[in-house]
Length: 605
Image (tube, rainbow, N blue to C red; front, side, top):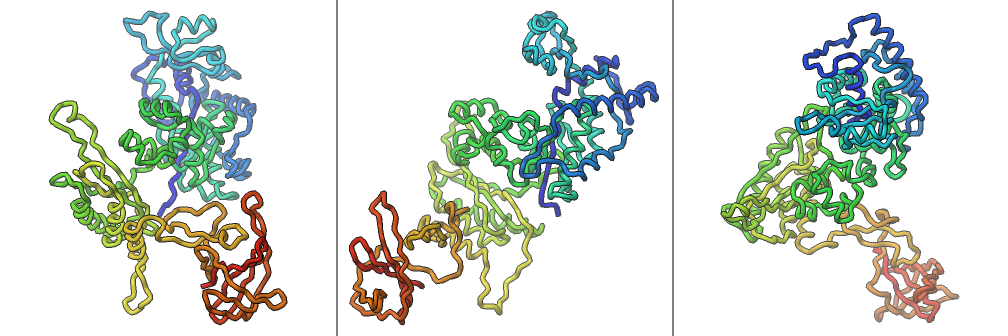
């Protein structure tokens, strides 16, 4: 079963201009009855072969002048020899369009503009520009100008009308060419010159771990270079990251325009998108303007917002954009479809101000979901509960069109659950900590992620066996009843003073503090709330007995002293630590050399 989904994106700069320019050179501009037949040939087959060879040589000369493509440093700095050999073995007779510009100049080096369709209200000189070539852009011409303004800036301007038929035909031809690299190729709807390419299954190449993906990326670039000398190719886990990488290359911060190939490592889409501008994430213009008004300029700044705040302010549109900014893109334009996870929705007969009616519906929903997924060999790895709150909509038209107020909470389980009991306990723990700001009128329980159903079974004869899902559910109930920081685990800190060498962290937290690691299975030092003063009898400077809380404890063995000092900028300390062994157990005491007083720090358990 395929566990990793990868997608590639190919972008040919100013592709519509090249398509219309070629159609004009062939005499097909404006034709509405042009039929495309595979293989793509001109009227003279011999001429097609000769021109194909000329175009291939021209492309090699143009691409050899471009800087070498830069990969993400996580994947290597240069392509392997195996990738170059794989590219060189492309069939020389691969179908491609006939040359449509005089050699050696490329069409993007000519000042070419595409104008919008003429209307009775617009004169010839008032037509707006829809696309401009690189040469026209260097002359200061921009899309949106009138043709009169553009001609005033460049007298050698070539003007052509925008032709959807010519662009569609060129897109079909380019799609057929890309099929030589991957069996899954889909043009991006509404964006001529961009294609999605299936990249799953290319991770087993020779050399590095991502050698297969690099070979695919170079092959796609080699094919696209027959149309434009500087195409962009990117591979990532999500469509949003792959598309953004074709604009930014290996780094948004560097802004290196020479990076023609970029491979985002698996699981790093969110980190790669963090410094990207908001313009590279699909969202409504109103939402993008609102984020910029709040001072959010990058994708990472938007993704750092709490999901609850995004939903409360912008609703479902904001949630979808937030997930894309976090690298969670469920769109699958290349593969067949995304598996639809089940959702159970229900409405309450009357608005509820407490969670008891909601729990009744949630219990039935969890039973349905677990039964349905278990029948398909799946378990629930993450789920979300959405409450619909009464937003006081009335019979007036203004209130009747108001957006329903929903609040969503998502839980990712430590291990997949396939039984309704532990899952309902997690749901109840979540709802117990949920404060209703308005009466609830509906609830929905949705499965966010699934995992293969485990074959582990319990043993009735083994009294030490415990159900891990039941343990997780019990801990969740303790957190809900007693509050946070109740179920904790010990972590070690990089410190010298015993009271700072360990700490307790919430067991549900994803990661501890920087520099902290789980403690090994060793005797734990139980620190007192505060050190207690004791009387110590010493034998040649070594503790021999300790009088603590009215009891005299004979020290059988003392290890030390370990002299520690520090915090001169604060109160400061200078101590001699001893680890003492006795018949009652091991304990730690120290001599405060600043006041010559002995203190008990704690004991080992």
